Image (cartoon, rainbow over all chains, first blue to last red; front, side, top):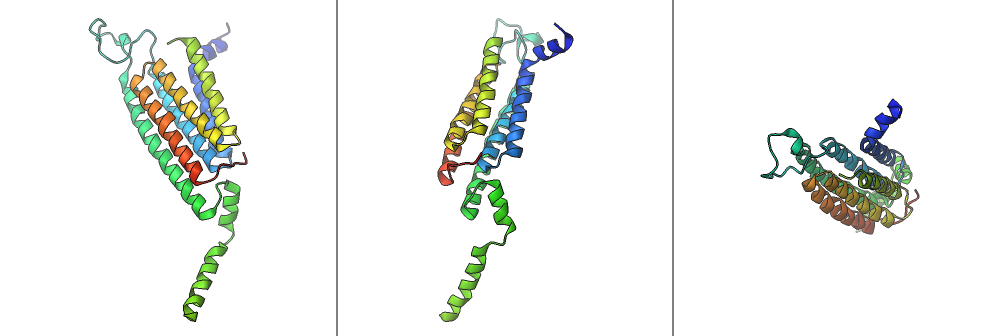
Length: 145
Length: 81
């Protein structure tokens, strides 16, 4: 087996994660729908969490819970629990970010009536007609009363 | 960790990610996102990170899916891409 193929083959989990990161970045940058952008963000943050948990993996090691029959003093017997706890925090932060993103998306739909990015930019460039109507109607209504 | 199982889960992960991004119907996208989160949780458990695994199963397959369906219910279901 040539050297470069061995380099690819030994690190297949990392290559899958890099491919997943590219998919998530493509979704965030090039998708037009705002729901799809949120999906791209979910894929990207899950791939980052997966990268750190994969980096903590060791062959022939058990879960980081103490067993009396397995020696604690040998480093190779147990997985390193520090990346796991850090990524637990990252998951909880990630679900909060997704919740805020969906709340902003619902407010955008309530104000502009669309979640497609090009239609949204068109409506933001042109001056909003409903604001002018409401300002015109309010003094005339007040004047008539 | 069985490497055949891990490669199978990696292929499932990339497939669900592409389906979630390319679906024309946003409900399909929501279901594929929930399947993606659950596959990530299975991969965590196969790599020995059990605590991360069950948190991701609750969050990725449960809460994100419920948020997504609620957001689709408040907005629109159709998409152009």
